[in-house]
Length: 284
Image (cartoon, rainbow, N blue to C red; front, side, top):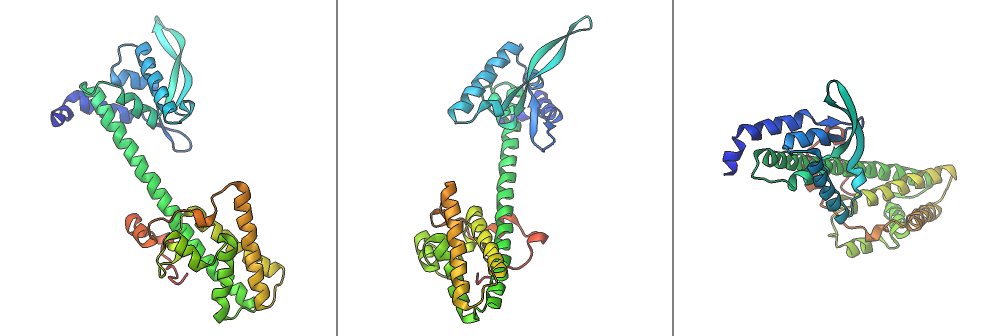
């Protein structure tokens, strides 16, 4: 039955028309005009379609979404015969709004079935793009953390931190930022001992560590810190300040942030990109 529906001319024409009337804002957001959607879906009059819009608004509210961000009132001049025009209501509809509108329609009608399929595909495509964008951000942050780790390690060395004490220097960051050492952080989060913390850290956790490393490097240089113990104390002090800033802002503290899928799995899903091709130091 479904296969027969997709072969109907009304189905194929509806799919094509929905794509033709799709618009895109200056920021790349897709939207549609309610008057055009109404015509394509074959509602007999505008008033009936406004009832469908009302049900879509109710659905948004029930899901905690402000409908005014999804169904936006606008106006247009419409011909009323003999060359006369009348100003009437229209709406900008988001992809989500169109999806809810079609879900309230009768799927036995080819036009409605086609619209349901069209917006289901559109929604799924954008979800995949959003997920890919999130993955890309995390990969970029992971790369930044690796570079920042090398930066602050070099500055610490110049301040007098010996190679054998670099681990102690970096553990001071965890003690300040997480309120515990690295070993305890991994135990709390359930991270295997040999798996790098940053390989399963999410964007906020990576950003906090990246910021702390860069700030610590800057403070060590600006204050001309010299001596191994002084550098270690400075590193923890900077981490303490970053933790306090997170706490004061109401953000989830690093030790309570959930872990994410290992970076190796992320790379397999996302695929290698040239800008992310630099190797990540597995020891970090």
